[in-house]
Amino acid sequence: MKPVCVLGNGQLGRMLRQAGEPLGIAVYPVGLDAEPEAVPYQNSVITAEIERWPETALTRELATHNAFVNRDIFPRLADRLTQKQLLDSLNLATAPWQLLANAEQWPQVFASLGELAIVKRRVGGYDGRGQWRLRPGEQDSLPADAYGECIVEQGIHFSGEVSLIGARSHDGETVFYPLTHNLHEDGILRISVALPQPDAKLQAQAESMLSAIMNELGYVGVMAMECFIVGDNLLINELAPRVHNSGHWTQNGASISQFELHLRAILDLPLPKPVVSTPSVMVNLIGTAVNLAWLSQPLVHLHWYEKEVRDGRKVGHLNLTDPAEKQLAETLNELSPLLPNEYQSALRWAQKKLG
Ligand code: ATP
Ligand code: MG
View 1: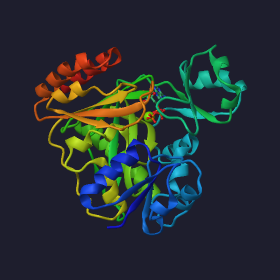
View 2: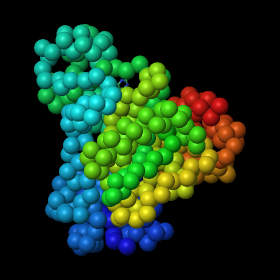
View 3: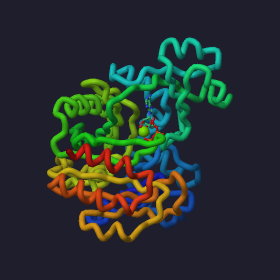
View 4: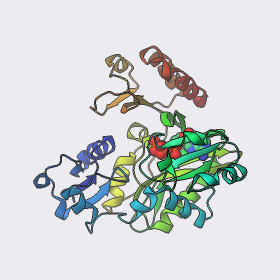
């Protein structure tokens, strides 16, 4: 089996490496500190776990490599301007938006987008960073360097957020997981719930949107599509050309995880639809030190990234999977006193989703 080199060496690269191991696929996440001699990049397939990567001699080599799958798609999706243009060109619903070129535009922006404007950096934002929520009169708080470098979107009053994770093979076949329900707090994903029987209409809508995108791009591998639910419809929030935080539950809740699915797709291995027969919950660990008491819960799978714990930083996640929704809800109860205050409302939200 061909080795795989991953641009970036964060937790997504680490989990791709873990997924490759049982299949005999050697995966080499490549960060700033990589030793070029230790990475067999000449005869590897190249992928990425981030949309933009630090420049080194080695990452330049990888980024221009002929076997870099989706190479030209990364810059197109990494820039919110070209990503939004792609959605518009496919007539796919997304939050109404425009380029924010200068401060004189504000009256027109509020007139056409409404009274809550969400300004987002075109490149480089993540976990809600590089974003401003502005109402009329608040636009002066925006730094001057934002103009020309940002888009502005309508603030959407959604009833919920979901994401669809899917994959496309070299010969154009697509497979999808059931929609994942996501709760974000301060722009960062706190908790996800996936049910084996999603709402059939929303699922079909989401699959047809993501299929259109992946087919248009000729994309190969796993892609994530984040959506807002408004009424009976989905609005696309954003796309990620990679494995995604909201798909982490698949490590324990699907017959093929999103990480394995991505490796299979880029290596042209069989790509059956992953089987999902039980509900799952994923709790993101954000700036929270590891607590071994979590492990006393038999349904808890701890995935710890071995990163330094810092405020607002994703340092691990807990996956819970069980056929009985009651068992999952009960485990969330047991976890509640073992997690800080800021997790409590999210735990209750997840229990409600489990019904
Ligand atoms: P990540 O990469 O971690 O998914 P991000 O920093 O790229 O996040 P977005 O996904 O664009 O940012 O936004 C983060 C969250 O902020 C969304 O999941 C949603 O909760 C909220 N948000 C973003 N855009 C809008 C919008 N137009 N209207 C209402 N809420 C929004
Ligand atoms: Mg997002």
